Image (cartoon, rainbow, N blue to C red; front, side, top):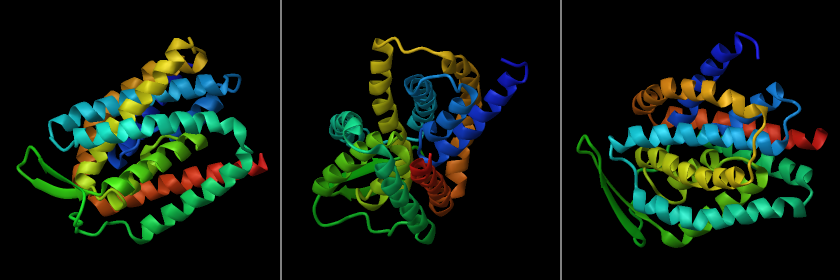
Length: 271
């Protein structure tokens, strides 16, 4: 490792943490390709394990900071986790049963289209109270009251699909989860982003635990302390960015991430 590497990794961890923390993602989809370039001899499992540890640290910090805001819908997230974790495991097991390059192309194209749609319609409608569903009432630290109704049937179906296809494609659920949570599950954006970080933390811990039991190591883990130092810097900044930027700009930033992931996945067919 060169002398400049720690500085580069701290900056990388901070920049990724600010972006991912603000939009409601874990950041693994940005960290993993860089770890792959830095450690070309590492196995995919070693890269994934290191990226997941970064995601756990980033999401844990965002959750701890968001607890003070009182904008996390814990009961909804526990429900989504119970639905999503089995679906994600099934998606991971299904990976070996299909031609990955063709799936990656179709899924990548799908993500690009979602990204374009979000850029064209970056904000959700204001009506969060459909006639039937699970009524939720969240009062944050500043006294703002969020009343919304979560339609349970389509919420469950959407969560199964999101967790399954995210695991199948090898990406975290955050980039897809925020559009699903705000548009299908009818959660206000101010609640959706901090709540998504809790869901990402739960899901990432479950997968990281499997890697830990399998004694996954490798050189990518050497980068984690420096990346984590960057995350510590990024955490409070990401909160400020989210608070001051607004749903429209944050969703456009998320859309850019979706398009990047989509193009990368679609290009698998040419590799």
